[in-house]
Image (cartoon, rainbow, N blue to C red; front, side, top):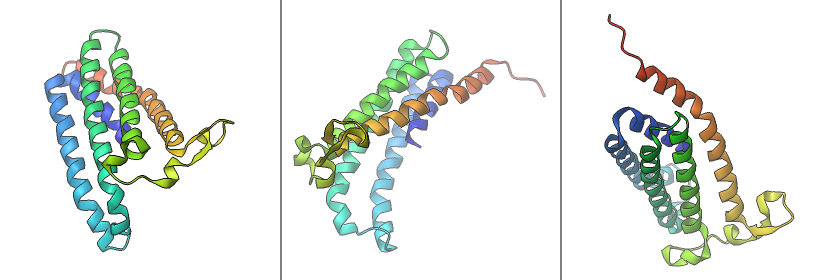
Length: 179
């Protein structure tokens, strides 16, 4: 669902401007914070996770996710707004690509890199070396492969999301038909 937040933000930015788009980003961010506080204890109560084990890394991952989401979405709004008068596709694709790269880099680095051990315990599995993306003959820490895979999916979705973006933006630009 995360990559589609760029679609929602871009559509809001196109139709209502950057101020409303930023409000939507902050509402999405607050919703995510509330969910990250309420959902894990709920899952623990129902036996779906071992909360004590997950809680050690939960704060670090939640902080990484929240910081990355908020910064990337606000960056997307800014980039989109600067490019909004160019070709219909340029603002949404460039804003989403820049935001997605930034989001992926911030999230995976803060959540899994040993450089951020001060933010919470490391995940030993994430720090193990393995073939890059599971196929290349170059070894890298697993979290780097995860980041590249995640970014690949986001980039594919960014291109595909141009279709509904174009359809909705075109529909909104047409005058309303009187009933």
